[in-house]
Length: 142
Image 1 (cartoon, rainbow, N blue to C red):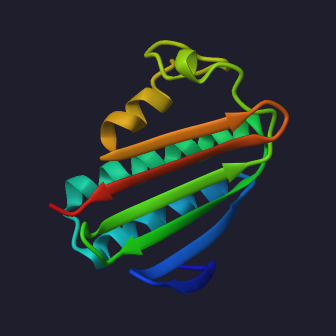
Image 2: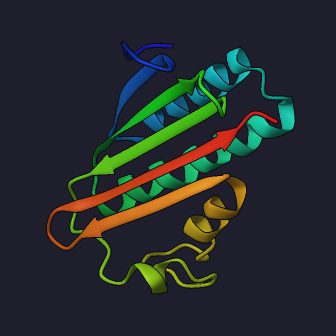
């Protein structure tokens, strides 16, 4: 698991990776799986977490060309995994519309953002035109 590791209160591990290519998406997925495994998530939840990471990182590549992802192991109550993805792209013009099933500003089917929100227990997206987008999502260990 390559990346920068840091410590924060209540956080066991933070892995930070740059996202600039398909290879980085694969690396981010694998890091998320490894962190989720260490926390104790079962195979199904590890797959869902990796899918969420893939969807959001793919959006970074498609719409902003580059960004970063932080994957955090949370040890406080609730215990789980938090993933923060940021880019400095053009931003999302209309978040409400982007969160509707079937809407796509690219070549996709329009299920990435709303599907990711359904997969995760917490999902927050903020974006400012000309400044970029940030997605914060978390999954709690049951």
